Image (cartoon, rainbow, N blue to C red; front, side, top):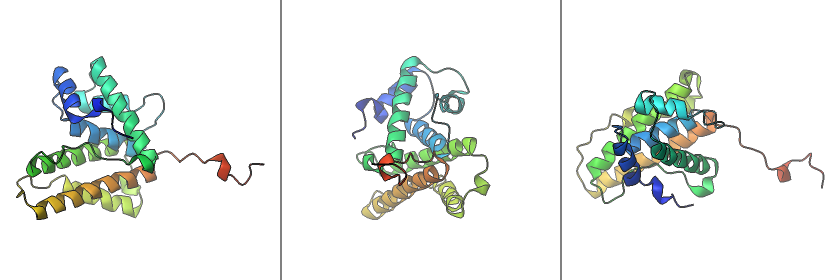
Length: 191
């Protein structure tokens, strides 16, 4: 499943700028994923109000921006619920300098932690694995942006990015909705 072109960082940035919202697209995606992975009710657009609170102090969003964010939400939920689609973080491409990508990863992670904390106020009662990754994510959110653009730093960035991605999936598996069971696997189903 390819990410729809409307979900690229540039289109989201243009929509945020047009609506005069000072958030970076990676912050929007991080907060959105935090809400989803924290277990926000996926019915009736329950995620919209907390996201608007985070993004725009509760003020309504422009219709075009809300449409883009809704598409981003649908794409993210699909990717988190079906591993075949491959959940990814919305981050700048490789062509962007490493220091900018590190900064974007830090912003994404900070926003993720904020989103999950709003929806999941009992994080301290989560499993030991989740508490550990939340602690590690808090450290990643504080990472230094001034990095040398070399192969070793690039590898370290890729490892951090993958750790953050897998941490989000772990949180979703703990707090997200129970996966629906396929009736074909149900031993009580008569054939």
